[in-house]
Amino acid sequence: MIPSLPGLPVWRRPASMPTFGFIEGQVDLLVIGAGYQGLSAAYHAARQGLKVQVIEARGLGDGASGVNGGQVIPGLKHDPETLRQLLGEEAGQRLVDFSAGTADAVFDLIHSEGLDVEHQRNGWILAAHTQTAVQAAVQRNRQWRKRGADVMMLNAAEVAFLTGARGYCGGWLDRRAGMVNPLALVFALAHLATLSGAGLLLNEAVTSLHQRGSLWAASTDRGRTLLARKVLVATNAFSGTLVNGLAESLVWLHSFQIATAPLPSSLLDQVLPGGQPVSDSRRILVYYRRSPDGRLVVGGRGPMREPRSAEDWAHLERAMLRLFPALRDVPVTHRWFGRVAMTPDYLPHVHEPAPGLFMVAGCQGRGIGLMTALGPSLAAYAASGDARVLPLPVTPLRPIPFHRFRCIGVAAHVAWYRLLDSLER
Ligand SMILES: Cc1cc2nc3c(=O)[nH]c(=O)nc-3n(C[C@H](O)[C@H](O)[C@H](O)COP(=O)(O)OP(=O)(O)OC[C@H]3O[C@@H](n4cnc5c(N)ncnc54)[C@H](O)[C@@H]3O)c2cc1C
Image (spheres, rainbow, N blue to C red):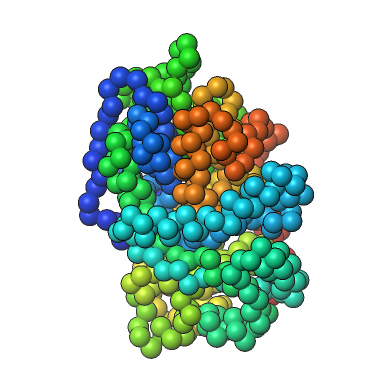
């Protein structure tokens, strides 16, 4: 089942809609889901000459891609050395090389195609709330600098100077990173895909997938049936029952966000004067940035259930005032939330449970660069079937044991982590 729409995010919604369309007959690639993953793959596949149809159950940008925080951060949750330990030297190195360039993929595309996407590329700050977190950042810094990445450690005074936020012991600046209007990026990718020849249907859910000889037959809730040589199930945190075991291999969480009214000029010098987006090092992290129209946007974990009232965002308002007490009188004008897909090992996974039916799942809240950058290899895989074009190994779907009870487990974890975070303050 597709969950209800989140509250409206603060991001500017582009006025021009891409052309919609249905490609009659058989296609080379059916893409289910029009977020960054589906649209980037569709664009690159259509550009290579494949016949591509995208089908999206809701409106454009109504998945995670249109509501997120817009922080474009390269790398994955794990540092390079950990990736090599987890995947082995060769596969680990391939993933490190790929993940180093995911922010480049987004900004290069915006520039090369002249996309109408507000963006800024002046780095991202990981703000450390304890000395232990500073030490972890030192390790990360060492590993990325060894690879020649444009990153540097910040001391407590430098973090305070760049962010204006209170309470950090130090931090790490990754200059490869930046920010985008996440919703505008979805629209821009949809435009690129349709201009390259892909068909795009919105507000139509794929309800079943069946093998018919060497092809896949997809049926929709509007009574359409489509035949495809390959199917990319780009549904990520919104995966339902289309593919056995996919939803059960993920834990989805809610990420909540608030935005203030545009800040008065007297406060612009005190709140993120350096202009970089920030994530802090807490177990239950808070992330924040300025929007193009000068608001402070703050995000973090929320309840597992859907919100009932503004009270469900109150923890973010408390976090904001702890960091920026000067915002006491600035009203919060927007509150919204979305779904993030997590995997038990904090890695994204590529699966192909049956020939020609493939998917990438699990971004751990860092999917803008990752999913946009995966587009070319997913398209190349759809065209060639050669798994060596993928930066990740194709692995079997592994449903999480006792998945039905995930809400209770996650809620208990979050409560425990919040307690630890508050003790360390
Ligand atoms: C609040 C929030 C803040 C975040 N902040 C950041 C951030 O700052 N930086 C960052 O890098 N990442 C962030 N993320 C993560 C990022 O948004 C995601 O990793 C990324 O958008 C995933 O893209 P996707 O295309 O895989 O999935 P989605 O964009 O979720 O697309 C999946 C689509 O599949 C559709 N679908 C599902 N089932 C069907 C069906 N049966 N038929 C047709 N369509 C179907 C859904 O409607 C949905 O639109 C955040 C996420 C959230 C929710």
